Image (tube, rainbow, N blue to C red; front, top):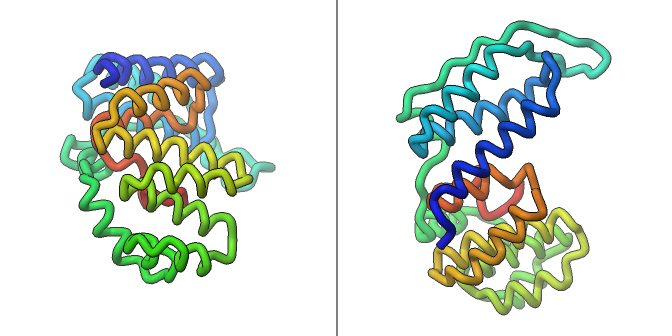
Length: 216
């Protein structure tokens, strides 16, 4: 599987990119992303890198405004949470645990898909987003060929990217390590910046995002 050090590299590269592209004021949404970087670095025992990111956060100002026409700038005052809190934020989650969560969703297309009744699931989809969710469940269940076929019907580029990301995660879970590594490296080389934290969490068998495998 991918070497451990690539996780450190991903965090460091993202931090350098944010630091290089930012001025003395950053938006609160950007601040939250950088906080996540620091917390994930700490969780993976990259304490020096985590400290460096924290120091950067507290050297800048944050724009807390909701309205883009008005700035509400203040000094940042960030401190790293306790490790237990970070663990809660980025929990380890097995495939079985994910399936159990999905099984509790009442939507008909999800219920049919989780029970591998894919034709019925697709008939209950009235949008491309729901078809994407069926494909995501197929990946979760290890039905990679079926998911590949369904993915071909998806036109939305973001939807395709999320399915590729989920496929990389699930190939790794099902121990298809070579195929998984190829997809991980493709995503890394394409520099899909908003996926890097998710990539790192997946490499450590943690929940990539809230609501996984659905993007919303």
